[in-house]
Length: 166
Image (cartoon, rainbow, N blue to C red; front, side, top):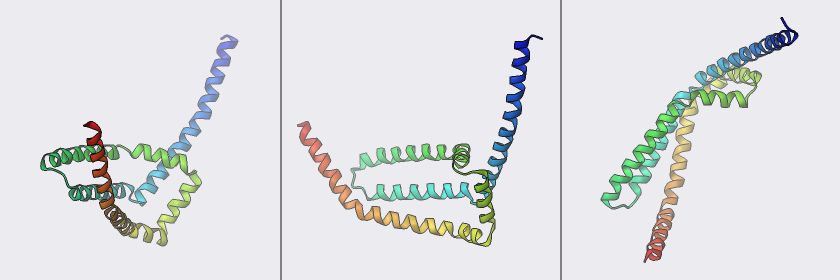
């Protein structure tokens, strides 16, 4: 075996030895992140958040003053967007695991998992849906309060656009 071949084999062996523990560490960390996501009901929370966004969009749509012909097209557009969002959210888990892995160290994930297994962590998890519901209600009220101004601005912009076309 030539010196170049021996050197190449040595480099390959070293790279393999260095890469294998890194992959094992990554797999260990990802498994802990999956446990954290399971403990925190991440999938359920994503679905609940999406359902609340969908309800808020529907409420806003229903408050808009639109001719009947435009309502059907707008409703179809809204449904297409929501369907696309739902599809993407369903496929987002691996990317979300990566986001967690890029954000937290393995030691931090261990601490977070320990917290969520504690009584305080369990209370937080149990009350999180109520917290989200109350936060969304607050957000909806804020948007609802803004709707008259937004509608006025929309009408003014449409009127200006109509005037420029003439």
